[in-house]
Length: 299
Image (cartoon, rainbow, N blue to C red; front, side, top):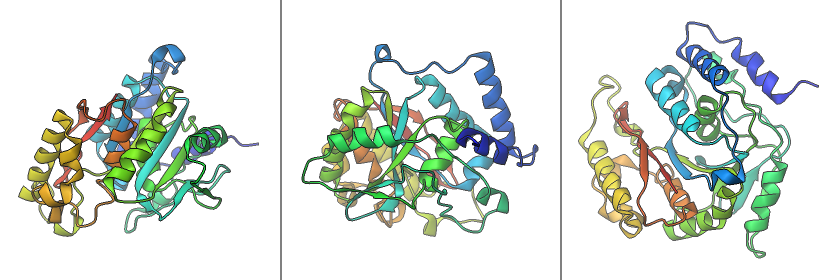
């Protein structure tokens, strides 16, 4: 039987060696060969919870951003499993992706054909699904979507961070935009961190795509910079109350988040932290196409 890792590697072999992502894969392989990534053990302590700005296929064309993501992953123990909440799967109820092999969701359009041939076939996440179900209230039904694989908010950053596709990954839907309920959901997930599970909220710190000037990709709009600074300040102070009122208090929010699903995974991340009010560690900042890439981890 062909292993998930080998199917991913076989697809990666078809990438033009001159492409930036091919260079990234060679770099990641060299780093791993020089110093194998230490696996998480109970002695490692709880993993942090992450919020990352994920991008789409252009992430694979940005060497600096890929290096930042990969370095971040290498700075942490290699997790036993990964649970990710992505901006690209909203649902009224709580759902999980299939625990059986499923196709990736290529939920983007207008990009080069190579991006629709990429694979990220990870090991069976059934054990993680059992752990997750054990943390949910008895009154909460969690639906397994047997035909749904990982969407690009999950597999694009993970393919950069953990390119060998050798860690079980499960995606959890985003069941609400209410910050309080998302904080409570994150709190439910908190014990997973003590079991070597990396909990990730995947979004984009600013996501005003309709208001970006494609002809000036290096310009940072005022609304994007102002929203980013406001969020960075609140995060540094651990001001969860301020963040929860982002719709009415954050400058530029109308343009930074015309819809809120790329910001709200942040509350799952904060809820999963030991103390959401303790402040966070920023791991990536800066802008891509005028959008804030700010990402952080919370212990």
